Amino acid sequence: MTEKKRQIIVFLIFAAAALSAPFFLKDSYLITVLIFVGINTILAIGLNLLLGYAGQISLGHAAFFGLGAYISGILTTRFPLDPFLVMILAAFCAGALAFVIGFPILKLKGHYLAMATLGFGIIMYIVFNETVSVTGGPSGLSGIPYLSVGPLVFDNDWNNYYLVWISTLAVMLLAINLTQSRIGRALRAIHDSEVAARVMGVNARILKVQIFTVSAVISAFAGSLYAHVVTFIAPASFGFHFSVELLTMVVVGGLGSIYGSFLGAAILTMLPEFLRVFHDLDIIVYGLMLILMTMFMPGGLVSGIQMVTQYIAARKAKRKDEHAQA
Amino acid sequence: MDNFQQLIQYVLSGLSNGAIYALIGFGFAIIYNATGIINFAQGEFVMLGGMLTIFFLTVFHLPLVPAVLLAVMISTIVGVVFERLAIRPLRNAKPLRLIIITIGASILIRGIAMLVWGKDTHALPAFSSNEPILIAGATMLPQHLWIFGVTVLIIIISRIFFNYTMMGKAMRACAYNAQAAGLVGISVKSMTLISFVISAAIGSMAGIIIAPLTMTSYDVGIMLGLKGFCAVIIGGMSTGFGTVLGGLVLGLLEALGAGFISASYKDAIAFIILLLILFFRPEGLFSKKETERF
Image 1 (tube, each protein chain N blue to C red):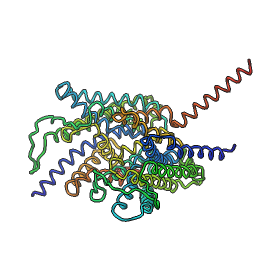
Image 2: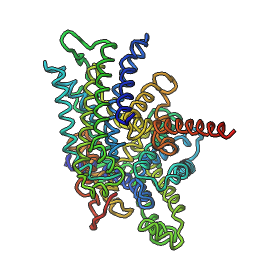
Image 3: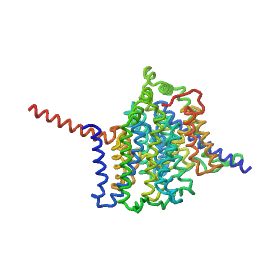
Image 4: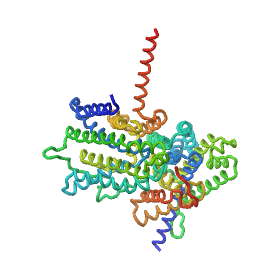
């Protein structure tokens, strides 16, 4: 079986599992949780393209998520516009902003890049909070309409689940394709050594800005979805804390792994729902996860799973050898 | 006259905040020069200083001086533990992993502080009287004098340490070239550890002297840390006067901006300055030579 075939099969199995999940879940609460897993998966993939593939950190990605959510929220509550058109507009605006700030910001490296993106994120957070007449300020923006296609209105969990997960699968497919294209290879080259990549003819500067833009567009798309699914948004969801949460998802799941992003998003979204204790301790758990993962499993859970399967395979092979010798 | 008095008032509060930013900035610069790491947990030392002092004052009813000393000592121990457990094992890792691990440490420390002391803001009583002093029609609190005094003292001590003691010179040697410093017999490892010790001590001291003016809570570390970083970026990552000027400029602009433009965007001013400096003069405003920032 070729690598490509194997990947198609893995994706189809994943898609089938994701799309059939609601039929096995009697509990609508669980479906709600899975809707948020889907949205966070989109966000984690967006950040992972930048962080895991191109090796460029962003501590301000919640800002693009917020930008998408606020543009969709504000325009669809104030004006009789088509939400899907607004969604495209929101993604475009976030992309344009990322493109413009991308050039100066991505000239910076490592720690400086982290600080600059963090600063950008906090500026946007302050703007969401302080432009009260537009965004509703700290008390938030409510009454955002549900999405609808003809007679189909996405106003219940079941419909929203499919809306979000079909979008999630589409983003996954796009990301998988992107990372395996020429661009994906170039990004990994930049990750390993920017100088070497440039020597090989990769235009690192442009490429970094492009992937930053793609990543922002994906985040804004998730923001628009979030706004229409929840119908209420407030700045607290788009602050530094959420940027760190996204970072944790990507690191826990696995840097440079699309399915890892799903795994990280699923774990970090579900933990607080099922562990009541977690509510007070969440930032301690995030901190510990970041430290322990970075120290002992830098490839994330995905690499951990690979290590375990390889270990089991090696033991099986060894046992076979022993049997053969006996 | 009224406007003039206001101006003086803003300048005063700007300068005292600026002195704090400069101290926090020093903490960044000391670790950066020794290890090449920007310590995202720097702000947490500041938070720990203030919170621990209040803790010792109110729970153990200690007098101010022992409470301050204990607070600085414990923050320093946290710095040492952090270096030994998280930084040393990853000495040769890529920046990305180091960034993530210091962010992890910072939210871990913040989380533990929240668990221990709760989410409330606390006030530290002023060191001496609360009687305002009148200067040119503006009022100044004795705490402002404490801030200026302690800041100047710390700057003088660190000058003497870095220029005239063997250990300080060894640390500077590591900053110039760690490999060469190792060759002449300087233990780079212990210099790294010492840089965390000094930086945690200065950071917590900054947190202690500002706490009576601005109140403190488990999450003050984010903002104060970032503003200290802004100061040190303006100063070009130096442990010298560049950073002091950087802190004062930032404090002044913030106070004037908040006073004359809009108080709600006060915090945004620091970050806009941070971004502008990073975009256009990443080597800092006061340094002449081009430096590469990898």
